[in-house]
Length: 517
Image 1 (tube, helix red, strand yellow):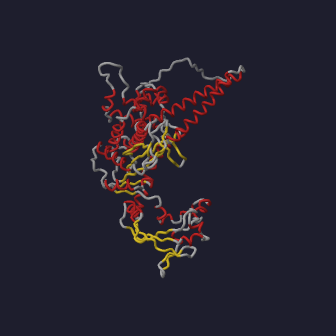
Image 2 (cartoon, helix red, strand yellow):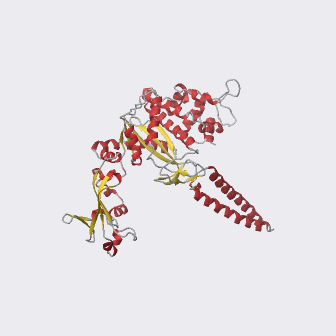
Image 3 (cartoon, rainbow, N blue to C red):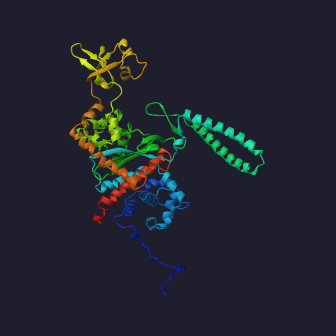
């Protein structure tokens, strides 16, 4: 008979564990521990407590910060898994020195960091500067749209929400009548169904009361165009945003990244999907951060700033001009003017090629010919258009000559359906643009992007900021915000940005990189 070694699960083992030996130099956990423990000032957290003379000792903010940063670096966001990791994971045990804060302590610490999170971010940014990781010449700005802890179904204008409330209340009345009829029946199965119906009535009634309370306490949300936008009952500071994955209810997390080692120098989450007004707050925030770490208030002057087409707006470009930064922000059609993309249609799908080659069903300005002899414009049907105005100043600073067709010529024209989009339009009008009175900031930026230098500088943006979002979203697994409200969502986003910066310190910092140890 075969012989096997005996084993006994009731025996006791004594395993000596050195906590410091678990934090291996060159690892992310070592960098988190060393930066927070030896290069971090927690005085900003002291005003939270008044237990210096009496009361229970609190968990040290350094311990809680280490737990959260390590957890976020491993995709652990919820407080209960973080609590369990402090009991079961040897790395977490080493960082906490065996302390086990419960989930409510961890959760409250994160959501209440409104007054301290910027200080934490700038202290880590100062470490990046001391480790020579900031280049300070080229910065790229971009946004990452992520879902929030709110449902799209609870969104709508005040009128839409009021209709939804009335529809629910109507449904509740109908169900109450049905419940009253079934309640008189002595059939056992019907009584069970009646109990379930009562639960549904209660749920729907609570929904209606929730909508009513929200409408009474909150006014309509007004967008940047001055019109009402959709509110959300769950998180009214979030917004509906169009992404490549569909429409989401969430936040637009913006980050400003340095070129040298992809250090995030400014980050903030906004409850709007448009980037057209975000350049000023991002540059102002970066300026404050640079002042905090001692680089001076003029550090951004004449520095290169690149951003994608979402930031191409008059307000953003005027902000860059006023702050004297060298901006490279292209318009949405800049690739159509780039000779490098002249043959890009070859790589499109067959269905896309068909849509590109399909001619517009309406006549364009180019289909109207100018007769040099008569000085009149000839339409595709061969009719003459007479001048309706000269030196007309139109939008965007252009000067144009207006032409107008005769009503009698357009009335019975066989090409009318291809020329006039609306059947009610009596005649066709055409404007021929001649010159530009004054170049706007938008026109100047178009000219700047179309230069060889402009294309070269803008092409760097993709390699500067996109890998940062790839690291945060894919490697750190932040695919949605778990908190509600702009303040709390901003805290969570900044914590992820801090993790990203600490990881850069661990990989490239002179004092932390494995090659330097």
